[in-house]
Length: 250
Image (cartoon, rainbow, N blue to C red; front, side, top):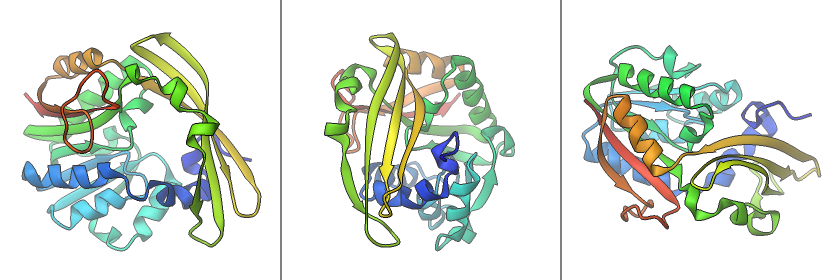
């Protein structure tokens, strides 16, 4: 049986890093933190802590926050994990004015389905930041056509399992609701482990338009400083897969 959230299933958490090897967002955010001179960073939705631990090698204080205890169990055991303050909870559980940079990776922004929850999160981020602090995150561009991309045929990949053998994973999109440039999806992630166990877990994601993202930031008191369309730092265009944001607290 798979828990309601895959992030609480130790079998799926165990293969998370294997699936994420080579992700360019990791290096992008490390370089960005260095470029803006961040000395205190909060990583919201830190997962297994790979980025937070690397950030802690340069920043004087790093806090990693996640709602999934199974993810944080891995983070705490990671080499260098003792240099990070781990919080099992939400942005609301982070102290006030403790960071000059807040990072949200892994498309964490898309897990805030309700607009009211998204607005509340941005308010919490402003509270966490020191005066003039920055927020950076990414969200997928809804105009790219994820319904055609997220199929079993296009997403099936086989990886080396950390405990030996191989596992296979794929995504199947099951439902889309909303407008063409602003919608919510439900997809099912499938994982077949080396022992043959087939785990399937559904997930809901919110795809907000670029204009919605920008408007929500402005309403929350952020000034949009820079945007990109990919991890190679190319400009955001209507055809970009990503909308990567750097915003400063007003």
